[in-house]
Image (cartoon, rainbow, N blue to C red; front, side, top):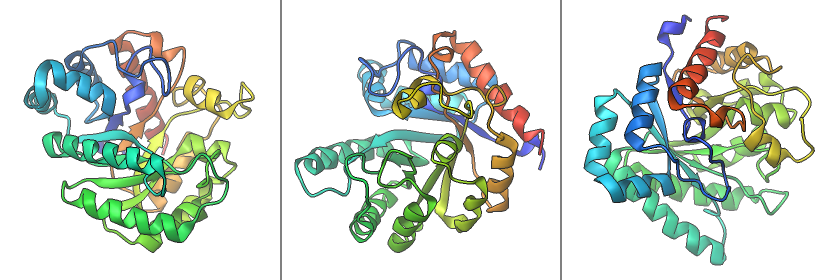
Length: 287
């Protein structure tokens, strides 16, 4: 495999500026057009969206102009984040269903490669039959819009192992449903990269790369994940080893680059985009 064959997508928070997940505000201070153009100049072929930011942009310039900007800058792949509580049977589910419909509206207007969804953060054990059934319904609804549904494995959730994630998506067995495999979550969850080979190719729907120190710099994993990730090659994870396992599992799609870093997010747009692109592509050159 040569680096020229690789296409990268820049995740929303890797180019949003000085905002972060569940922070005081999640809407980027930078105009949408400026971010997309910076991503294109750096070499990215995909762009990450965040619902609140997308709607803030839409209210200013409209979906048609957003679509024009994306097309003019060669963005072939779009993702959006982040749906939670999609499997629950309570008031939170009502809110989640409303948000689900809003995400589908974006998919209808802009076209999405995938919709990122999260596991449960309030229970330790996954109800696999329930989550599989609800995952299947979600995938079927998203298929109308040509979007994949990708479930992220997270170490502080009820889906913190590859086995649990695979049980959910395989029982659901939908052509547009699978796992999002992020090197950071595997490393912090103590999951060997070799476990990736347990996942059939068709269930690896998205991949994210970044880096980290081997030992968390802070005690709280949430603080670690949103403030202390590193650019590929600037941490201590074996990023090429992760990529080799991903390729061995048969994945051939675009690669997301999720850099959540207090230092990184304070840089200018072009520097953020170029540093993420160059550092990530350098890892593929080592394969």
